[in-house]
Image 1 (spheres, helix red, strand yellow):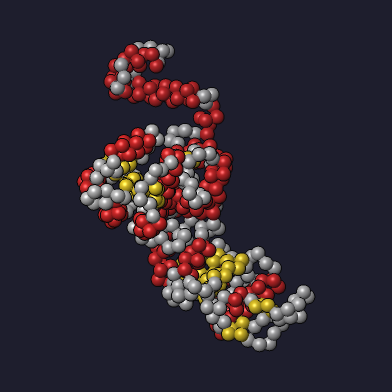
Image 2: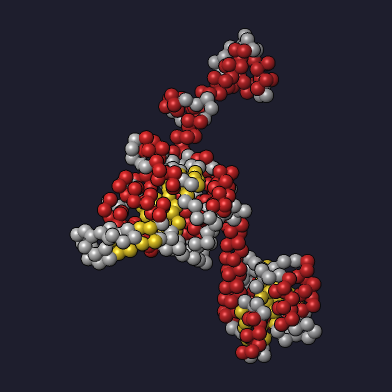
Length: 459
């Protein structure tokens, strides 16, 4: 049900419109003039205004101007028996949602009202979701409510305008590429290319060719010249993901590119100047790899001019629900209402440890949206492994409940009866069997205590 105000100076038409719209289960407030409508709008809010154009005193066009200025979120539908193209254009220019000419068709009127309300509802939901997701620290798709991610966003802001190389570290799935894209988006290079390359996805020869390019005949199958990513990213950013997996032979060539700002294509003797900023990421411990001879120490220091460490999701639980809402919004088709997670689902998401970090959370929400129905996400829509993990965590953290207790309990009622009797017997033992004192301490009647301990004999 929506709240509507109808402004019409012809009593018969006003009554008809009021009846039709009330028949759609709307709450309708009639107004016989624009002056009366403005007075009503000052003291109450509405989801939609339907107004005639030709009225005595303040006409509909002036009412439209004032209402759009004072109440821009309220859509306005205009009605007139004097419809002309110029009038329609003027009304739409002033911000009217749509325009209908009298005599109108009932179905056309009701459908237009529904469209206006649905459009406004979608806008409001979108704004509400944006308000939930937006913080003073959000950059691009980085959602930051926790102190750890706010620090990451602050570092992104500071380093983005520079050309310094940045090493982004963190567990798999924490969002290292998202941070790299955030740096690029906030830099002076944002209008140029952002080119990612996964150093672990390609064998050594292909990785070298992909990064530095090759000339025709450099190797079998090289039937034409090819520019590498450093040349293609001219003026932009190249992102080297999983840099720890890069072969040592290519590491030395990358070091020369960083030092000299020049590349030499495979099979070529010529050097080509390049201007691409380098961002790198890894979930490996590069210092351990340096000690093992798997990573060049000089390259490490070249890459880590600035280091940004992304904390795992389990250490920034304030980000879990905003991230979940972000994914829901991203996966919801335009014009559809985003699904809302139930309170139980929110608690499960916040209490889970997320070993796969943000990537696992994103997959979890996509699973729930795929298998759920309607505009709500419930417990049964979540992936089984998450529910199993949440159950284990709850069992291990329950006070006074051991695994043996759980195995021996035939049912919940039996388990609770057993624990209750153990507690009552402990109180009685401490009070030397004095049931009156025990009942008083337990805040139950003596008769209730006797019923709960039928085999006890009074001392």
